[in-house]
Image (cartoon, rainbow over the protein chains, first blue to last red):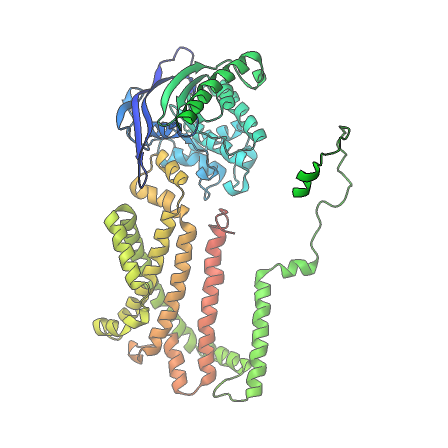
Length: 266
Length: 295
């Protein structure tokens, strides 16, 4: 939801959250007593190596799984189940419904939840499709689009719902490097324009520093909070600059030190 | 590979360069219309028609050489018998009778399959029920149930509908269920993310996402149902009033009207082809092909 500068309260509170899931043979603890708060307008990054439970954490915020310990509050209400107030953008390209056109994919969540009439939904959808520069493809089916375009549709679909918080699970990880860079810029431009709140999962330090305004660094097996850092000052323009590299190296050391420690144990 | 390592070949150093990208216009053709022959041979229907034509010619030649119309009538004799039966109105009404019964059985079978699959996706005991029943009954030829059907429902339409339901139900239920299982986790989560639950989730997410499988099931079931019906009608007496297409074939064999028997068989094949290549093709073009879920 568009927000003004005066309106900057705590939006999402994650308190002492421990997450576990079962595979056929094991009970895996994905995160252990993780705390963090997301404020309105944050571009909040969950960063960590694979196995730090960052995606699981995002799924818990989305309501797909319940914490075994701790609580997740959105606007001071506990998260119970998946819902359109936390629209999700997935990494996989098949998140779009192949039987719907781009426009229908964007309008469907609005009409399916009954939050908008078909007419309003169409208007909103066209507006956001315009924002991600896909107006020409409004009537195309997903299988006709490239990977980057599909992710842009998914972004438009999520933003058109004007959710309280946008959840992005490594949304650009499956894209080629050039397209990824373009998408990061586009996301930042959209944020500048609309000022939404986003919780963004990535394993790339560089992406975290460029996209994020605040970075939560997680350590693996199980995921625990290692640091929370400010990164609001960096975009692609600052890439390679002194401060940018400093932050990059700092995070790199945090994650890398862990890997060395683990290596010596094993 | 080994020679590279042994002799330590290194790439030769070359100067760098940058250049203006050459204008593209006028360099070679960008788009060319295919030749008439290429375009014609790209039409599936035409190629298939050509195969049919060859088969018809082979049939005609063989039958003439055999010269035994009682055993093997010629293609032309069969066609004239077919036209004759259609014009006299007998064959058409037989076909209508068959198709009416078929649609009743098919509709009922698909309906029961829908209920069974819904139970199977929503409860674990339902899953067990479906997989056990399918494993038991899917291999059982529908026609083997005909004696039982006759005992329970007597000579008539209900018996025919019963065996058709049996032939349709398991194929559709099994395919639909497999299709549901194959729906990707991402699409499931996307659907739940919209707040869809229960029946709306099944209708708006699972069914369209599993549609290629469901359609395959419907196609298989159609073929099963059609062959079961014709076979059942062959066994059946005339007591169901006006018999169907199978009965037409049986009758004419008894009268030694072999050309009519062939005409009846041709009608069975043609209807099968029509449903496959017109009805199901039409549905496919407008759904799974348009959506890029099937080539």
